[in-house]
Image 1 (cartoon, rainbow, N blue to C red):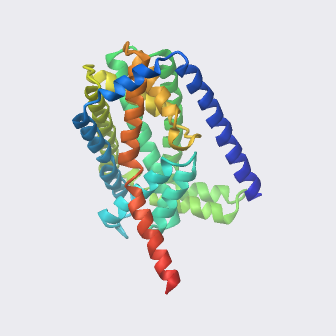
Image 2 (image 1 turned 90 degrees about the vertical axis):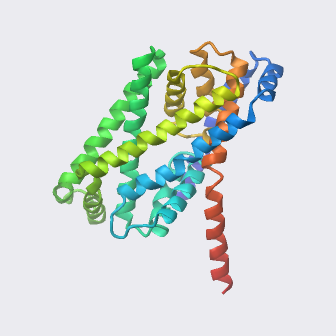
Length: 322
């Protein structure tokens, strides 16, 4: 059963990668590759360094958010939670759908010493607040400019998902035990007990201060990402308004909601290119920006986790040798 499931996931990833590859090839046929390289050659390094620093600020903000959402007892040290989010970010940015989420739960249990129910609740609340923050980005962009039809449709779909997730978490947070008892007639006891435990661990949902703080941090993560996009624009000599960064960020957020391709390679770049076409940026320049922006994002959010993953592997090797 497990091997068949893994085979289906691998086949889906290969199909998605093939589709993205075909789309990239079709798009590149209408571009001047020489002009793309010319755009890349004219990049200003200082702005790129600033963009990487902005992207890198997401990790400590993420660690702060997870500490707010995690139970106060035991309270993981900030350094430990930073390692958890760094390793989770590495897996999220190098693997397809759900692998990174599962890794996040694993790291929360093994490194932050949370119970499994608490780890699941942290992940669920993180998805909720990040979803709300993404909706805020799209709403702010829509208030300034007229969004393309595909982005407006995507925002509507995201709103439905976020509202459904919020309703489910609120129900579990306030009525978890009652729902578990009612479902005990049809579901295994292990599942109902886990649901009840998750409901208890959703305490931040019931706390205006914790929920507000977690949402504020989620919005701060979006703000530094938008600032990174503005830095990359300056690196390429673009003088666009702040609204353009919100549109590009919104396009990337929508395109990468379901990361079926590891690292969103191709999907991320396509979203940036389509977003900049809305502002009249040439395809060659937009592709150059997209490649550099994704590279900066990867360097800042995927590479740091290898430090903690390497230390963990070394510790396991030392323990096995002993």
